[in-house]
Length: 419
Ligand code: GDD
Ligand code: MN
Image (cartoon, rainbow, N blue to C red; front, side, top):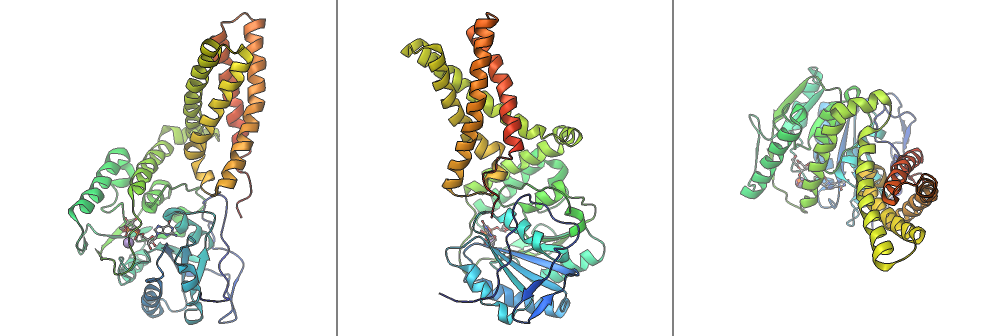
């Protein structure tokens, strides 16, 4: 195992938001024993990696050769590795002595291409922020053209496979079909964003820090570019053609999950950028998230009612015991969907089953308080106001749903500050 003692970058936690001014405070680079100055650099390039130990040295060398020539001393390369099993982060760390402008971040709590890029941008010092794949499928040479378009006033410069000079190498017909299909889906669901560029799937682009600063980002999966266009203040977009090369080492991490993530991402951006998003901003209340919580609550209601019928009518338990058992089944159902959907972006920052169990116990506790409230309300409505048992149950659940959402939101679905 390679041993190196050059510092890894600190891993940001909490909201995925880029600061308007570059990361303050200096980063001591022991090799050059110089404080990297706190005043900003011109350019920070993120290289997100997962199992790229066979590629990382080559891409760092190629990028350094290019940028030492084009931007001497005014750029940085930031490798953001998600604790790769092939220890890419360690291979990259060992390169630091030869590449003083190289920094490495090893994430162990969070995973995912898009959030890796944003965490890298959060610690970056550049006025221009960029991303390039770590597997040399994005030719580094295109960078100089992208930088030139940024210097010409673009807010966003994208390396595109679908403009003059662009293309893909020997892609299979199915991969081409899937890529174009994803683009078509984007044009249907989110035309306002996807129609602005020829290659919305591109993972190779530069953006002005000011265009995406102070905006909470919440991407899902791979497609960081639609997140930037969808939530940033992007006016001028330029595209530069490039040919997407074949991999020589390692393999693509794209699976079916990236496609379902992409669909969820499009829907989330559609909701957040539509009337609901504007209403949320006006009310300072996460209407979209509350609707998702409500929909999950509806599924829990179905589970609760069906279980109540099973325990009360079929098995013959008393009403209170039946209601408690039914409610606990509904709580388990609701936790599962809230953790995977309503609060997914927060849950994703706290990986590991222990944290999930802690989130479940906390959610259960909050819901048990809600359950006590529900039983009290149910008996008040049923015995006190002589309401029908099911109508009383329904009204009690509605009141408790709002209670549960508000408490979970205020406690921000977080069990521990993500380290
Ligand atoms: N940190 C981190 N975490 N990096 C990741 C992860 C992850 O979960 N998944 C993939 N990466 C890194 C890979 O190591 C590689 O450097 C880069 O992200 C792209 O991953 P690939 O798995 O090689 O994706 P691809 O080649 O199929 O598609 C790429 O190019 C397309 C065209 O630009 C991706 O960038 C796509 O988003 C893009 O559309
Ligand atoms: Mn690739």
